[in-house]
Length: 189
Image 1: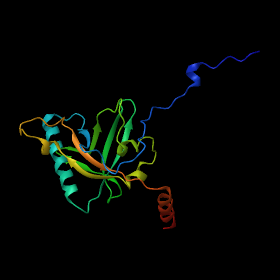
Image 2 (image 1 turned 90 degrees about the vertical axis):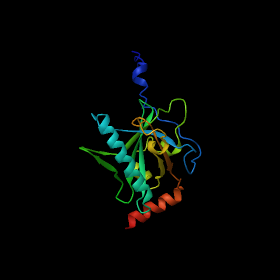
Image 3 (image 1 turned 180 degrees about the vertical axis):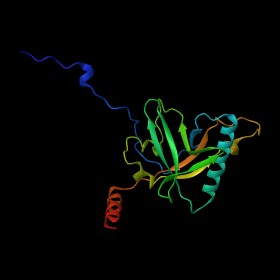
Image 4 (image 1 turned 180 degrees about the horizontal axis):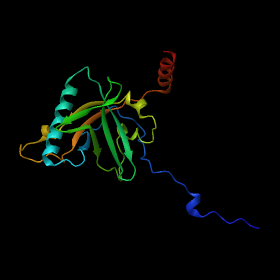
């Protein structure tokens, strides 16, 4: 008796696609930065979106102006849409998400990038793809600057709700020896 061949559908169990990582890790993002649109609360109207966006802009400007407030980020890859969701976090407060209270909406500040189809994502985002423990990368990641839509706006009556924010992100590489030494120090405490 000859065994039947396995159907092709069952024999190829492929995981979700992951973006390709660039070979070299630049110290900072490109000149124009990473463009990402703000994620608004679900069910918010235009006026609520406007007030939420202005509160986010004020919070980011205040945090970036304060030298003691270390701002970091995490990026989550969405394989169906080929986008990244960037969450802004406090490094000095055990990597808690930065939240904004605008009216009766309280939400963590998150942004969604444009789809990366046919082009490589920047290293600062692609490094987070496929990583289970994102907090290990968060220690090295930092937000160096944010250009808000209000800073780039010429017309004060322009609708800025869907205008992207531009981020300057940095994620320096650490050699394996330094990483292992850091783990040993944390274990010895």
